Image (tube, rainbow, N blue to C red; front, side, top):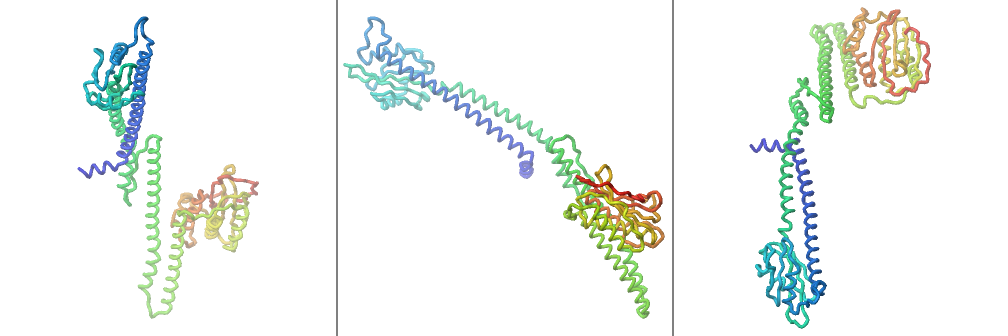
Length: 489
């Protein structure tokens, strides 16, 4: 029981809901407490105003401002207090008391809810606090409740008695309405929190359901099972996260599939030279020098082929890694001339022709683009007869948005059904000339083009031969050119 509870409390759903309820509870509590304090201070201020009015009323009686014509002022303290009890009627939740020489002597005969002299301790307190020269105010916790009071000293000339007029309000009764209102507020707030909790639990469950599915999917994904996907609906952040996660799974699946295919292809390609070398070694006659030399030459040749294969595979792996390209602004016309010069040195047995240059500056990795372009040139030289012309050029197409770097030969061309297939790993076009290679050349070209955000493609133009090109998007072409004529395109 404890383990599922701990697991539930660690969930994002629980923590989000708990945080939301905590913030709501703190907000409601702070708002209610602030409102209660404001209302309490308002009530206390009203009580103090009424106590001040009592002091003013007694002063008026002392000054004789409300005496009828022919009426004489009180001659003794007791008479004054009795007159005050008659003239100043207590409010609701108020009581008054007349004290003479420390003893409670007078109280209202009716209209009061409590009698101050029922609490001797309170009487003793106000007598002790009384100041014959000043009005005393205070708040006291008594057996009658919390009282807010004023003590007014009374003295009459020619009367040695010392009197006190005490007026007190039952603070608890005055605040009862506010207290009850905020008690109701507390129950309503608790109900609101409960409702918020229930709705929040339901809504958060709906919102976080894709995350739970994401976690379950991620937990169930293995090296050989990348097919699971999470349905994505809506346009909120969680839905976008789901789509991003599915896209990541797509990339991982493509990557793993590519790795598996690569491993299968590599194992197949390496098995051939190993089998050849092993077969010759098994049949080797160590006493025949010619046989030993021939086997040695064959083994070295096969090892060189394996070394070339490993180098090409390593390059293919690097093309998918960050930092493979070192992009810089490249003058494509100048690059075209450089590649053409290198191609002439690559195969002097062919006629190399410049077939137009794109006068544009593009963001490229000059070394990698040169490598890919020369690979196209090398393939063209392999598959076209010596002495034939191979054209090489660059052109901007698609309204200045695409840069093409191309090579055209006048060989046998490419079978129509293999125009796309030739870019796969270890694919070779049989042309009956015994052309050897790793079968990775055009795969490397495709990988370099893809790293530049482009592609490689091939077609058979009119007039024979093959035209193979690298097409790269120009993000912001600053085209200055009018392309030269492109013969043989």
